[in-house]
Length: 111
Length: 109
Picture 1 (spheres, chains in turn yellow, blue):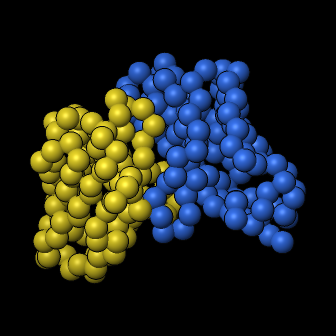
Picture 2: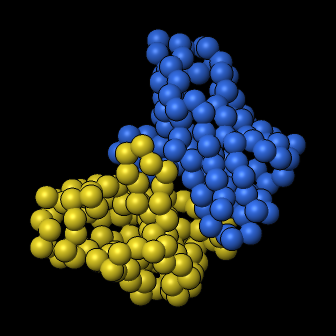
């Protein structure tokens, strides 16, 4: 595997479900990011991790819970989501805050 | 607060018809301006980084330029495979990447 991978690519969940999104980077980068992309809106930064430490939480609701066990893996745990949380969730990585490289995204639908 | 505005929102070109996409920005202490290409249902693909006014970078039919207030992505003799959404983003002293809403480009035969 090369670059940034994300699983699953598509996810449909009910509002009472608990699910997790996974991201893995194979680039040797030290920083990892979660973004939300909704139609007609700019990418919204959700969380930033640098060397496994969370350095930014962009006022994200607590129903989104990130986890970064090491510099190569990043998770986004989801629980009691709302329909308006339906979007494309993108993971990215970078070295020292330089250009970010993105994964293919997880298309999330909340029913 | 850093801001990025891209225009036009959508652009339709015929194959071979050159044009430019605009990215206007306001940022505190520009550290870098980035161009990405995004195909439907996929993550953004990195194209260029520009660091200072006057800088230019090229890749195949694409050329990015930078001034103190805006950046242009020039597309020369585009082909249908250049159809995509092109995103512009900036990072400043806050070290946070701020994106525009993108220009959706369609190139027809």
